Length: 264
Ligand code: GDP
Ligand code: MG
Image 1: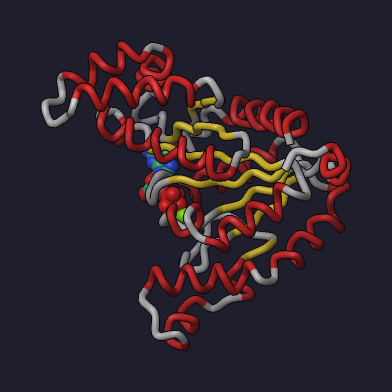
Image 2: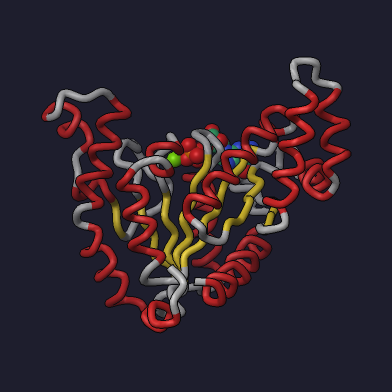
């Protein structure tokens, strides 16, 4: 999606921020923190929840999938388990997504950002047809960026770090949208180690080689692949709990939106 004609159809604002990440990485808590930050700074935001199974949200959603699709009833009606229920709910919502886009378009002049929370289980959004439909609907109408939330304390182990980065890498290539590696929970563990590993793959290899369960040749080839991946993205450290890194996050969003306008 990169022809000049298409570009002219894309408005500059609002910027869509799709928040994805492994279950428990802190997406929902971070959404809440970002909403608080926008209120405090008079940034005009809109908030969307795409997790049909969430019980309670710490923030007030302007658009909530749960208002349209009752996940428990979908499970009963189609005789599905929890994951099938979430996926089918998302599919049902995706069929009406043009209406969601129109709602945002009507308010576009009054909005700087739209924050989008996704289902707890990452693959339900990133590897489903409806996730792709929703992402494409956003990206063909507004500048759209992906915030990939990383559980920083849980990624201090090189093996976990690498699999997390490979997952982020697959999302970058699947969506072809600017990606912000958002190292969350820096109140528990600083993300300095991650920056070092991303900057210097030999430092990463040294850390990984002390892990005996690891195949070192595979590690070496993969860290070269990831080296190229790291060159294509931005990274920030944040804490959804303490509020650290909010300014840096929005700066990265702005830069990514610029990149979007130049590329897509
Ligand atoms: P989600 O599944 O990605 O939406 O994750 P949640 O937002 O539900 O958070 C999962 C857990 O991580 C919860 O217990 C949160 O309180 C905790 N959490 C989220 N962000 C942070 C953070 O920045 N620091 C700390 N210490 N805990 C966090
Ligand atoms: Mg959540």
